[in-house]
Amino acid sequence: MLDITKQNIDELLDPTCGATVIGGGEFQHTSLLPFADALRSRFKVPPPGNLVSNYSFTCLSDRPQRIWEDFSTAFAQDLNNRLLPQLPFAEQLTFDDLYLTYYPPSVMGVGCHRDTNCKGLVLAYVLEGTLPFFICKDKDMNQPQQIIVQPGQILAMRAAQIGDLPRPYHFVGEVKDPVLQLGLRQYINPNQ
Image 1: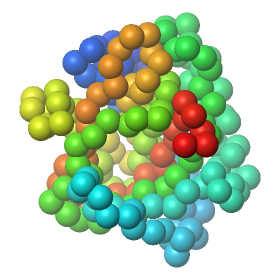
Image 2 (image 1 turned 30 degrees about the horizontal axis):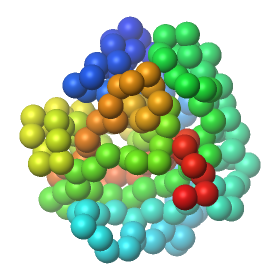
Image 3 (image 1 turned 135 degrees about the vertical axis):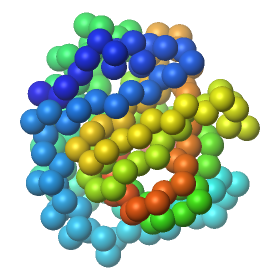
Image 4 (image 1 turned 60 degrees about the vertical axis):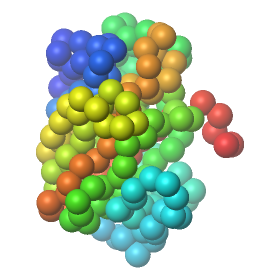
């Protein structure tokens, strides 16, 4: 079971925050590392755009392996059992987008943005390194709140369709040591 506290619920429901760090509980990040390492040759850099993007990634949903499917199913089931009674989700969590992200050392990992096509929760399970995550008031990164996520911890961030609460602006700040994370998302419109 995940280590979910009242503080986690309060932070997710806080209109000025919307993100929290959850303990991994019985989910062992170290058992996923060999499977993630075996996929490093598939990592690609995102196409250039307006957003600072100092990372590489690989989608696991394209060619899912049993380990990732089993993990995401167990993860979603635990979250649904623990969070549905406490958060105004529109529906149960079912993660249809699984991906690994690698952040090398850089001044900024990814620029300020909001996730647009996601609902429920966006999760980042840190497998290696320390994720320097920030929530902020707006696109100009005003009033940043730093959230440090250690290996074995999960960053849970509010997405769309949790009551009428807004999706938080967020960014990954200065990455001092390499970070490897497993991302889990649920799309509003999966084919977009």
